[in-house]
Length: 148
Image (cartoon, rainbow, N blue to C red; front, side):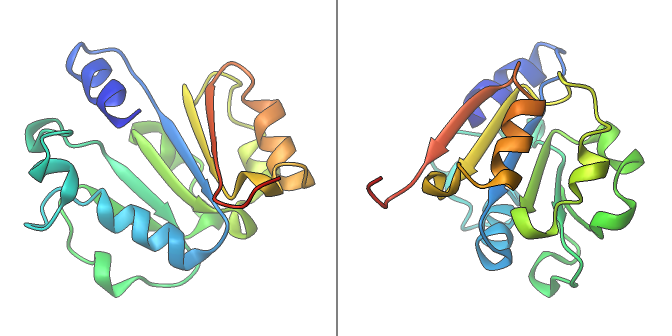
């Protein structure tokens, strides 16, 4: 999925991805993994992502995230004031509990082309289903290690 984003970004087509994660710790980990300036970044080590085409990433977090301070391509935003700031971002990483759904529902239905749901066994929850229903045009990836 991330290679697809990089390819589409390189061809000047706007592609946005939303990662919906079950808690802030996992969301912080995913955002940190997308920090291509880190020497230990797996995506650049394996040449999945090119530093020159680093996706502009935002982590929606009401709490400060010291580990992401000063990173090249990852920004931390408070979810209460993110609507305008999302316009120039390629990847949005969010904890499902901190997503202000009313504001998210104001985004166009085709705003994201990829939506990744972690802990997909929670997909029946209203918060997950509202996101999935609103961004129906997006390619959805649901992951879980819990059989359901």
